[in-house]
Image 1 (spheres, rainbow, N blue to C red):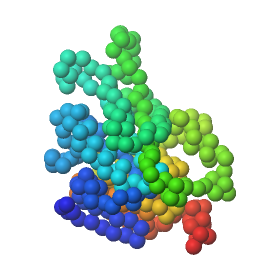
Image 2 (cartoon, rainbow, N blue to C red):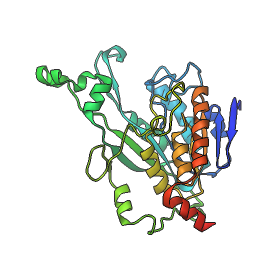
Image 3 (tube, rainbow, N blue to C red):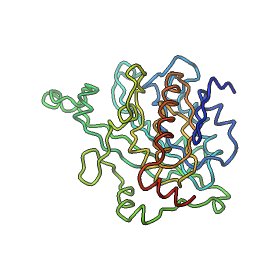
Image 4 (cartoon, rainbow, N blue to C red):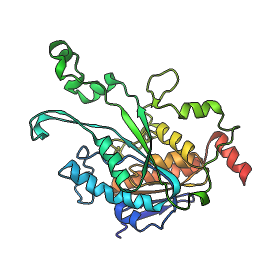
Length: 309
């Protein structure tokens, strides 16, 4: 395994490395929770390296490469624990279609099938509501244009939600792994009712997820730093970390990017391991992870950790 660089804090370790090789070298049953956004097949090419999982010729090739990681993630996850991935379906156009058509590629479904094929049990799907007006302004997709709705609505579509897919490792030894516990004083019934919602809305009165709540916005940014194209929103990561792990447990992100999952995990009293292939993202992640470690766990979580010591 070729580790290009690494950085270790008191509660985190970050590696500039090929994540498939790194995960394959990890010991069995060592991770409490993994949270990440996989590279969206053929949508973003982060660098020209053949190690870049998104640098592929077809969706089938991507899933074949991704399956190697999913297999190793199953092995390194503790029995009974979870992995959660942030995905969406993908739009394709005539110039990339053998039939000359345009439509949607079920990237979400393929990821589910890949995980199940490697032993994971499909545990939960959370729909992330997104505003179609903001999507239209950002992408200029003809599926969302009002002029097409007026002149030929057959070509229009609708807004593209995102999804959180949660999988669980059902395997021998589950009874020996400590359960994930929630103190009612810190997590009252209302907090569970909120987390249990099947749709996390953008503009709903009962739930507000914010697609702009990403690491390079929340933290004072370095204007010269390269911005990650699609970081996982911090509020999504924070809620997954709270629901599916205990304080002081280890969260792993095999696609660390600029460190979003690690930042959220550290701020909620967890430990973190992350890998990233792109050097500029790795350097920025180290900066953000160091900032999260300096700030420490916030609010009631810090008090809970101090009381437990």
